[in-house]
Length: 542
Image (cartoon, rainbow, N blue to C red; front, top):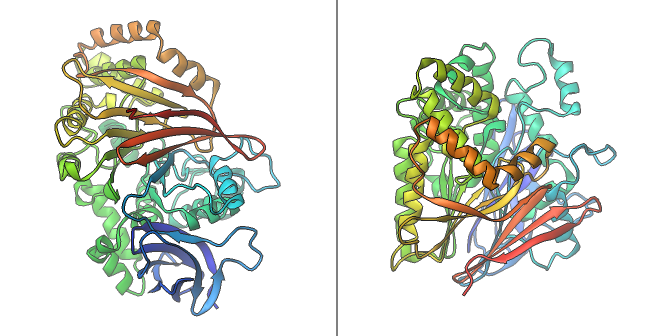
């Protein structure tokens, strides 16, 4: 009899259809049965000895809510008989409904309930507890997880014990994960957390990777990549990271129509064992990053979301350094400008913030100038060492890409068809803040903002708290300008100011988008399991 090893995860949901992801213990037929009579079935596919299914659910009514159950080979496996949570449901939007978008990044897996949590309460656990306590109350329509869903390079004590039982940790990569099987342990640890498991079964989710899903500072520079490729364990780590991401995260980001048109998905499902097919795909992606697009678009009524890959799509050569390769940049431009009058809000999901504290921005632009040889070879060598040591690889470290994104956001937000807001959603930097750009010429008609929120569940060192508070100060800004002058860096195409934060804690931001209005709420997890509102504001005041 097949058992449910992981899931269910409710991934895609629109007015009439949804997808539900599961992992089973053996090959089987997975079925989703909804209380309203809708549902769907799918056979599992196999990768590296694991059995997965992404079940398309059809026949849903717009503006409805229906409980669902999961069956494997006809036997019910979800909800479990001893569940303490309400039934998992699929909610479908109707035209004109409010859209609530919760987002954050950087979630280190919570330890078992009987162990002390070294990084404090988990914001996703707290969100799950609140929804479970009031199932008919307010909940997100979608949860955006903006990177570092798993930490391949920072494993827990429990994972390290499993690794030590499997191989010699004295050999690289030591206590980091090495292959696909070990990646699956990270997803079990993270997604079998009872609160998170139920939350992901009942709130649709969109995901994109960041560096720790593979390794800290993934694709920092061409020099970094060359060093990693010379390391004997790196290739298996990267291929396994891409393969496991495709299975666990990427597939669920796609709509049923996109899945039906995906030749790799069809091929993996049609073969008894898709491991080699998926590995070949990952090899091609490693050899030519333009062969795959991890970025994607989702529309929620009159809200458009563009989730952007800022890790695998980088151009790393110093003379042509770019956050996005030309094809990816053009895709972003086309998706942002296409049918501008058809959406009221544009959300750009990028794991790395576009606007940083001024000192950090100027330091990264200065470092990029040093590394490309602006001050000579000796400074270039110093710049590369500093880049790696200080994690200087955000949008500011790719100056041409920073300028291109700045110009695109202004263009989208200007004119008769401009949306009410253009909101850049990011994480990564282990604190939260709101920043508002100010263009030297006429401001765009839309409200353009950088909204940054992390971590969902991770540590916030004193250096982060002190450094980012100082980074926004007038003294820090003056210091940053000295760096910029030394690097002969031009002034950015836009200025900006912090209008909220910085806030430190395990936290989530939620946007409520109603017509052409947008409201932001920041909540932090407390030791008692509650989410406490620390900031609430209108982003598009009348």
